[in-house]
Length: 469
Ligand code: PHE
Image (cartoon, rainbow, N blue to C red; front, top):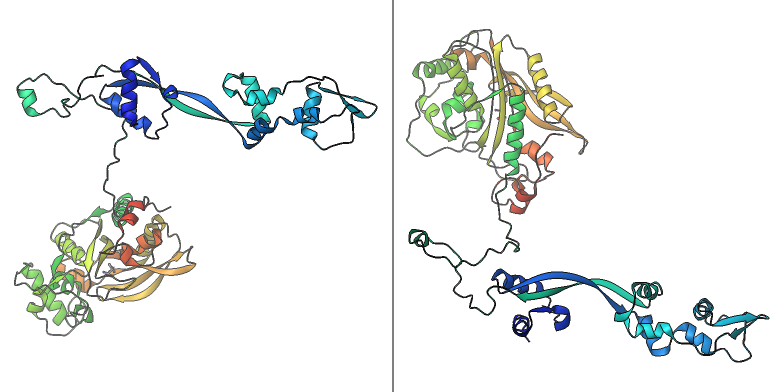
């Protein structure tokens, strides 16, 4: 019989019923009762009690009699020798019960007529005292477990149709002031846990790195030029027009006639420094083409944004500043386990008078220490826009090796002087990818697990907080 039907049918003739008496053993019983009570058809309370069942040995005892009874029955009139050890359990229980006695090293019956109490108890478990049950349990003749049952009574809606109970309140109900016959809320149901968004590990890393810069007193630069002119990306940085990185093999060119305006005076001074030099530099001595500088590209580094910012600063009264940026850059690379065609750069710079390479080394030590890379080394390097230039290596304890983590230098006078800065103004700067520390932090070997169409949503969901300790 269907459980719902059985419960309701029984309630028709009984005010209160117990599922114990009904003998219902439906595993869905709890859910069915919750559903009926949420419609106010029934009310119920949960009780619990112990259920005792015979163990294998208990069943054997019921069939064959207890050990002590059998031991007692097996003793002949002449007794059995004390040394006989064929039924040790029966013998010691029979002693405890004072059914037997020892005389002259022989065991004799003390009582002739005895009752097999244990066997009788096992046949009527539900009338035993707690003490008796506990003895049987100690002898492993029964097992006990706690079990729920329900006492059910009629609810206010019992016997009434519940079909017309309303689930939602509509705007019309409110406007018309309708008398509502609402289905009661069921506060016992467990709701679905809602799906929610997760921060991408690179976002977490970016936030942490921003916090490090902010702790060190840096302000953020704006970086809103994904599409950039070659002028700000290369020329303003004194990168010659025939430099290999300006090749379409390394840079994405944007097929557009749109022109991004550049400040004319400054544009001319950049042409001059490239072609003829100045401020003590011989320049590149090449033929600098305006059209080349106007070509639109996807910026290959955030240093293009630093150049824009420095030009802006040069137009105002000088004051020292610490600036940083974190944003996306694009390179026409073939994609492999450690390279993507787009990634993120972190860039920091300090502009002040008379800065030296020792300032740069000191600030890098401080910065990387805060990223939990306390051991760093510098290696002389070359960048078209910095002199001197240094690559930064950090020791990775887990991998037991030195890894390249960044690039740095002092911006060349050929970059700063055409902007209009005085001779003693220096800019120390460094850059690193955001992906590298993220891969170290989240123990990834393949950058494609971090960014791009192969990223696994589960991975994003499960990456922990980013902290550098
Ligand atoms: N722009 C450099 C790069 O793309 C990083 C860098 C920034 C180097 C500032 C020196 C100074 O790797």
